[in-house]
Length: 137
Image: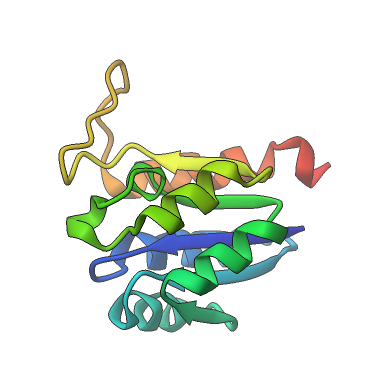
């Protein structure tokens, strides 16, 4: 199973996701992609071994990913303070991969009806959802 984690800004959320996936024992091919080099470096420091930065890696990885994980802003052009390009948002949105999107309320994205959880709780729920996906079975 190919899991792609996409994050931007400082990569803190992505790093937490990587650490939780690796600590959970999930067997997958994990790729991290930062919208900037700081985010990529942070996720690699979290233990990921395969990573890249920028628009083209997002577009390329979305073609073959089974699961894409990231903040909800990765499906919205110009989010993450402009780091998500229209091509990135389109690639994520058009991907046939299962998308596990975390409802992070930054950059004018607010998902209504979602309970407020800490970042750590969001990450734990995301990895639990990953474990329980049909892709994993």
